[in-house]
Length: 263
Image 1 (cartoon, rainbow, N blue to C red):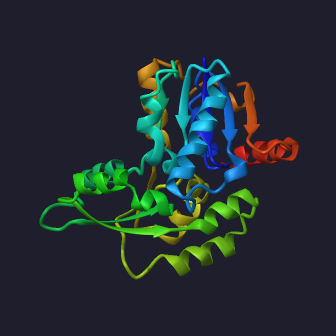
Image 2 (image 1 turned 30 degrees about the horizontal axis):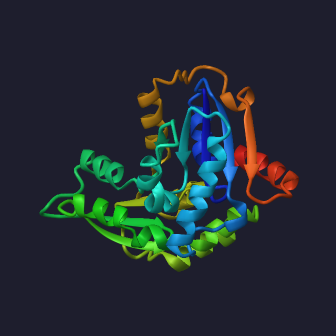
């Protein structure tokens, strides 16, 4: 089975790494629309067009399934993509893991009509304004109150391979109110998942979640994909092909291969 994973940049590598850690019997094609990175600050109509072009490119690669490993792209284009008759493979998307956060907090006895949970959603500008996120928040409005923060420099840091921990932590301290005790922080951009450990370090009282495992698990269940956690990690033996919208991509391929190791 061949699974295509698509993102505007390197964020989707955290989703690919999830599949590899689950040791799924699959090969992977990773496509980054590097030419138009980042999506989060672009006009929605332009992003939707970029996504369609990228999916059309991948559709020619004889794939069995596709993961739109980008919350921004999913919120703008997933419905239209699924309605396109020329795509004969299932398309899976990402959404901020609000439900996961609420469910896990509920198991801890946190979040009710009497005392709602406090949840921070870290997202891109487009995702923060999307109907998709508005619906998710409304669905669980009786259990939680929400704040949203946009952290574009985390995307820049990943793409520039800049993982200076002190700078990242200072950036997070500057942009997130540490005096407000959040019960959960939702990483609503796949780039942000590169910095999960930073969030854990700075906000030890908060549950830190993303949608990576949920999306991977949904695909595995729907396609009955064979995965065995006890096998040798697929990162060592799965075939992974990298493609980029930018033509000169030899250096990018090497950079993304290195980023995959730390995703």
